[in-house]
Image (cartoon, rainbow, N blue to C red):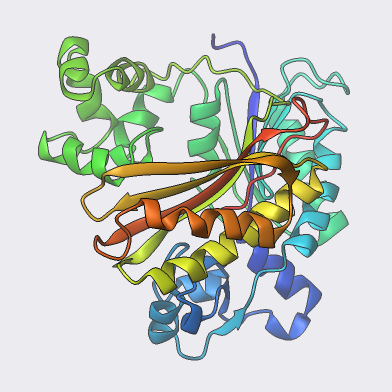
Length: 356
């Protein structure tokens, strides 16, 4: 399916750029948006000035400040970022209603058939970037191709303020040079396994027979085989039937102290509550998710006899589930909370998840 026209828009250092836009004194300075170091906070994002010091998202704030002591730390203001995001998504819908939000600062657009009848998707991408800058003062990077995977990779190719086009004619060479960690579904664990097998980039991946990939990676083997050949028929899906709302965080260091885990749960409960309230839904089932140091993943849940959306009630239920886990005796590397059994099966607006 090389006749589709897909655009991936990714805002540049979105949270930090919003803060610099609203406070001109921050422009040109290393800005970190994230939690406080005393609360074991992590970096949500940072300005490009801060990235020069090696700071990146999901890094412990304490480490980021050691790398750049002069950096300016700002706690996230999701309501402010969301207001900017809605203005940006309104621009997307001027061209197509086939918009799939990935986060507040990222989305896919299918412009194969578009409202303005523009045949060249590159022209649409340029217009969207220009309008975003004129209306918000922020820059965005765009990738244009015939599927979501290639458009996504392309958008990150020339950041910030980039525009990259991957056509069928150049896809083989483009993917051949692509580091294996940049392929969909290749996380840190899979990347390590790929490298151990001598698979360093797309060219290496393409050489591996399908049977061997399935043997090594199970069902994902077919997926990797197709991606190496530029095949991704995943549709752009503008609306999702949400069965739950959740947040999770991988910790910069494994923790064993229950009080530390509870502090993390308080922050996650606040964010999940925000999502529920914004989407005007409540839920009955609260699920606690933990991943131990040995990567064993467990979940524990509790179903209430009434619907909730408040931070206090979500936290209380989640914290009460800790006793049903090995937390306190076994180190934990990931903590998550989700609320399901919602009182509305279909949401009018899709969730715009936060990314850390």
